[in-house]
Length: 417
Image 1 (cartoon, rainbow, N blue to C red):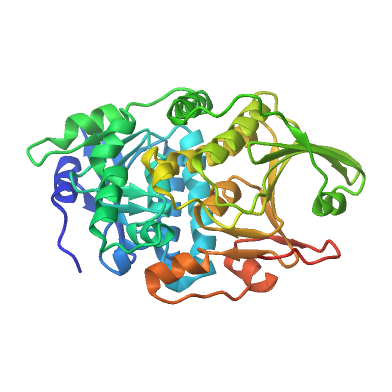
Image 2 (spheres, rainbow, N blue to C red):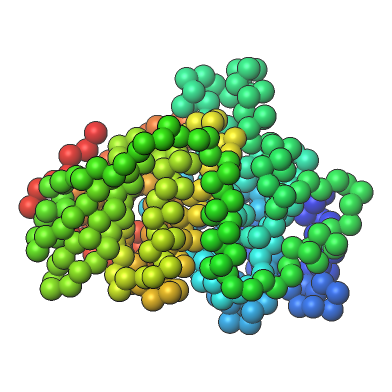
């Protein structure tokens, strides 16, 4: 068990934190007060397996988000976690899908959320941090969608390489994050946490409107692309099977858009179906398509996914890839809140944060027969655990773990790389 971080201790003191119930793995939940105002709080600490989030931790946190949504009580999260508990496999992924849905529901219910970060904030933990409007970093915090070992492997080196270590520090450190947005600040040991909490937990207005502004601000971080990109009409065998009554589809910036007809009804669809990992540009353009739909929502929006993972590139991490991934979840949640019924169909590969961002807002997740849903791709698992798990689970495993609700058989098996 690791010693408590000074920032965690400062937060406990500032809130007069009182634990409720027994600790659940790496998670302790409780309550406190801020200037006589009741506050709920959760501490995710590095007690075991790098503070990872497994089924038990996710269930406890999901219940806390639900309580806050009912009460409209402010929530403070302390996060020192490397992400999903890989040893639990699909069970951890399914549990995190439910947790993230509860978090999105709380945000759209108007719950003020503030995040205070310990040493590590990777993967799913970084996605939880960006449910908050404001984040307070320790001086030594590192935040990214991918941890250093995965980033190093993707760069063809190791975390022990001094040049890579310096480049990674420049990309994912607290100082780099504070430069990216004024919503990120760095704590000094002499600072009182209370003034920051007071500002971070001011109740907001229309959640969807505020999150749309966050989306628009993200565009300013993207490098300008060459002009002249135009939508190109596409035909796909899986779309012909799914929309046997007809469809029109185009692709631009690596994002699929279209309209299809099935079961006598018309629906809009958007998709991330390129085999390349999802980077910040493609995530933003996907979100832009969905935010446009949310303005005048159709009755149904189907999301199509065949993208094995997010990009493990320092260029994407420099502009905070997590924010672009979370933006996809916000956009879909806004569309659902506006009246659209959102579904997700996994037509090929899916894993990790990309899967969660699209699955959490969905009322139903369908996996096409032969689709491969994983906690993380085998290479990423090997970089973390030193071993790879490449087997494709059966649909019964998906349903039991909560990562898919229905199976769709199209008459062919999706071709896997």
